Amino acid sequence: MMGARIPPDWAKEIEAIALGEGCSTAEVCRRAMGQFLGKRGKARATIESRLRRLEKQLAALIAQNLEGD
Image (cartoon, rainbow, N blue to C red):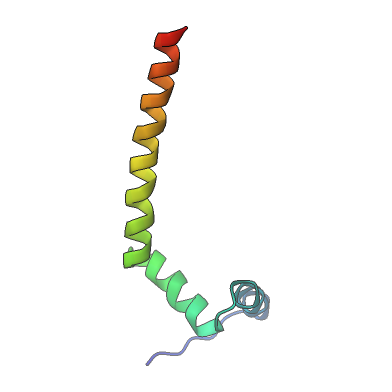
């Protein structure tokens, strides 16, 4: 386990994010550190995979539309 001192304004921002996300301040800090360290969760990988698939579908639809003009 680690601890860190942060400026009071950061603490307020973290608390606001946690409240808005419906999670703990510890979870917000874990997510932030994970992003900083380049860690990717399974959910993020799934979202990125879906985004790539949707981008390909969009490109195909645009190409079809351009061919129809």
